[in-house]
Amino acid sequence: MSLTEQLKARAAQSANKYPETIHKIMNNGISELRDSQLVNRSLKTGDKIPEIKLPNAADKNISIQELLVTKKVVLTFYRGGWCPYCNLELQALQAHQDQFEELGATLVAISPETPDNSLNTSEKNNLSFEVLSDIDNKIANEFNLTFTLPKDLIEVYKGFGIDLIKSNGNEDHQLPIAATYVIDQDGTITYDFIKEDYKERADPEEIIKHLKNK
Image (cartoon, rainbow, N blue to C red; front, side, top):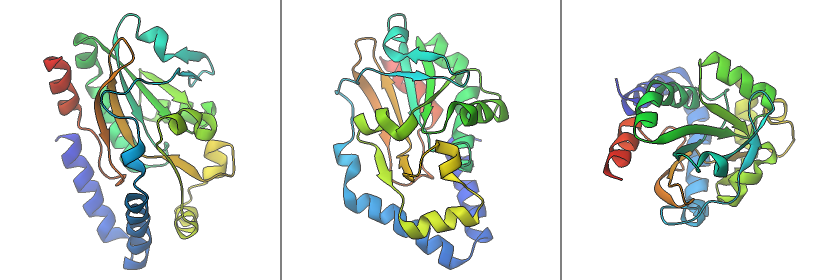
């Protein structure tokens, strides 16, 4: 089953699990994000990425520019290990990591979670690629991906047992839009996938198709 199919199945399962009031709040959050037109301002294909140096799950600083010296980078921004759609995405990317490497690309994931929580995410999903902590969404802000959760959605998340203050180590309640990029060795973005709906993610097969054509 492709990642896209898995995400649709998860969304269908969720639709049956939660009451309409919950879905309305969550859907309103997506609509507000679309209305903000944040995606129109996000970095996209043809743009150059900023300098990126962030701590990994072991709290060691990793430089994307240093990785680009030898290979392209597949860079994905995800919301956190508490997000089931993010976990499906990370697992699918892990399953295709060897193919990315064979096509000359290194896989890296970024979230606003603290290094300790990134380590939990990495271990839970058996990830062998770098998972970096973008504390306070500093890099996500430079990509123009960051938004603040509506108050009613924060309360819904709390009801799910999601504690963003604990996960991210701040009280901002800010998240990045889930986005995936392929970055050429000169730092230019050659592929982007940015959707306001957190249930949509770049399918690894599409990333592979892009890498094969470049």
